[in-house]
Amino acid sequence: MRLAIAKIDLVALSYNLSKTKQLAPHSKVMAVLKANAYGHGLVTIAQHLTTADAFAVARIDEALALRAGGVTKPIVLLEGFFNKSDLPILLANNFQTIIHDENQLAMLESAELDAPIATWLKVDTGMHRLGIEPSQLEGFYRRLKASKNTHSAVNLMTHFPCADDLNNARTQNQITAFKQLTNDHNEQLCLANSAGILGWTESHCDWIRPGLMIYGVSPMLHCQGVDHGLKPVMRLTTKVIAIRDIPAGEQVGYGGRWQSNQPTKLAVVAMGYGDGYPRHAKHGTPVVIKGHRYGIVGSVSMDMITVDIGENSEQIAVGDEVEMWGPNLAVEEIAECADTIAYELLCNVTPRVGYQYIS
Image (tube, rainbow, N blue to C red; front, side, top):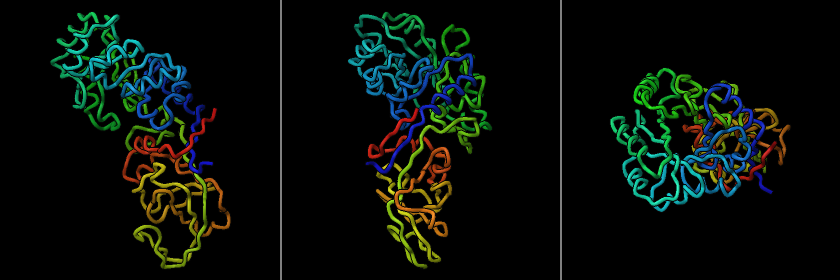
């Protein structure tokens, strides 16, 4: 039996997607499933997002896994393709591709294909990661429209780097620039990621791309999913495997980085960075046992964490469940305690952790 379990609430998943659609009722939904559906299980999550209009992944192997799992909805490759030999695979599996540079466009134009491929032209309005320059839009657009290897419709897309911060004017500037740039093109537009959906209504347009928010986690600065009416989908749990009496003055764990200032009891729980829990979680990072919060002490090791249970030790026994994050303990809070982001914690859950899907 596995001690560490990621319990995935499929009812909460469906609820979050419904909530997302309510926020942008006139937009189609491209649900983002990259990185194993943000650590939640790629194929199972896709199979339960029945009201999404399309899915988005980063790489072709993720898209192929969805098709192998019986998923038939449109799938968009957010990074596009990187070899000419990929194009027949895209065509055979009905994958749509983003075009973000000259190399991709040239490969697509020169390929010998039996049918056209649906494309999304990505414009860099300020992220400076992937995308063509705004000045290149007209040239790329005309070439895609003229190519026998592309559908007549050329969807247009951009991405926000700072939409999580409502006080940053950069997002509004991007929205304005992108809409001005594409105003004369009668094409489908997609701007809003999760932060855009929650914070920037003007960005909703024809399509939205919810990622983190459909898993019940907030993409916004200093917020939690519950602040937006979302429900956490993942509940990461483990068990107490030992209870130890610790005298005053004793150092605990690797490096002896924590020392008890009074006699106490510690619960040893079966969770560590080998399960994906952040090694740099600070002393006092909370866990929940039997409805009460307790703080981590000592270093997070590969397989175990020690928790100071102090005066409530009589209520806790070996075998009790420990919630590391979930409905009673927001993953955003744990991320803050570890100086990281919730995205990383969710994506870092390792194969050693068992998955239970609850419907």
